Length: 202
Image 1 (cartoon, rainbow, N blue to C red):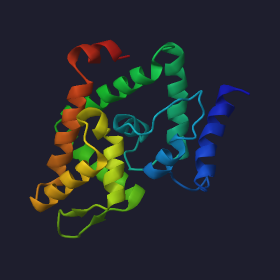
Image 2: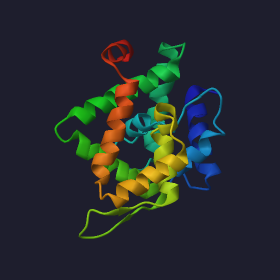
Image 3: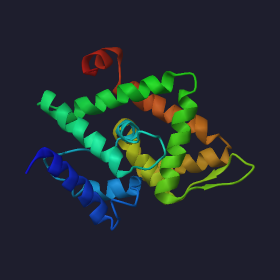
């Protein structure tokens, strides 16, 4: 079986497991996270990585179509061939570097925050009230944010602690925009340093 056919099988299996039609339906974050635990060992990719998700979503619509995944898996296979050892960590560092570059652009913080709102809205359906900047998150939304930002890895906070922090943000009327950007910036500064950016850029 050729690599192209294997990639197509891999993608179609994501749709199949989520009972979706690859020709008509889009995939959202919860579909990818749901599939991750059943992923084939030869791909060994982690969908719970924010910068990688941003990289895959070419049109920044907050969801993923078959073409997005075909283009991504083709590139990822080539990246794996060029980086035989520790290729997943190196790819994530590369994606994080590109993400960081976007964040530093004049409208980068706004673009990324708006994309994240679309990402979580498409996945679990957050409520955004017309005429207001207020956003209502369910516990499922917050758990997905916790997962893709890898809060436990970088701060040691449990999901319950993170949910309490979200509640405090709401009570203090802190804008979601600034809250998310502060978390992203903290995490990327932990993940990326000048030396690491140089080392993993391709």
